[in-house]
Image (cartoon, rainbow, N blue to C red):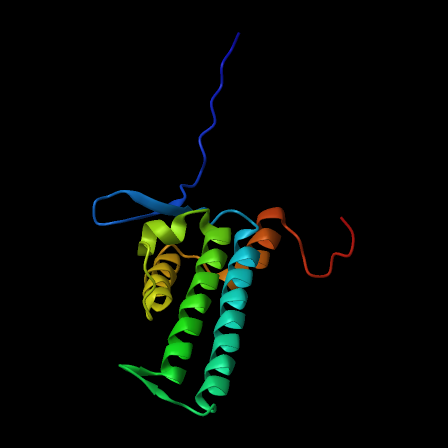
Length: 151
């Protein structure tokens, strides 16, 4: 019996830690990638906007000193930590379960997602990923013209 093997024309982008261990991969050729990435960004923005509103509400409450932090400061920190945990879940839904743990470890820090996207976005740019031109690439590959109405 003849045996055949397939070789993909593309390789997913691998993101590794300092020890060379793969933290996660991105298959930028996946047609669902731009849609899923857009949803990731929108979901994270929703969480951030909700958090900003919570912080505004908390900061307008009457405050009381309680040791090293005031009551409002403590409430804001607790709320921020909860928002970061929500963002971890969104990240895991996109990149795969456990990704946030592999990337950030068990603790949250204020700039963790800024740091994350400051690595991801330049890597996507370097790989030539332009999220807004995926449809144009499909049209070009399959010879679809804008004036064609039927398949």
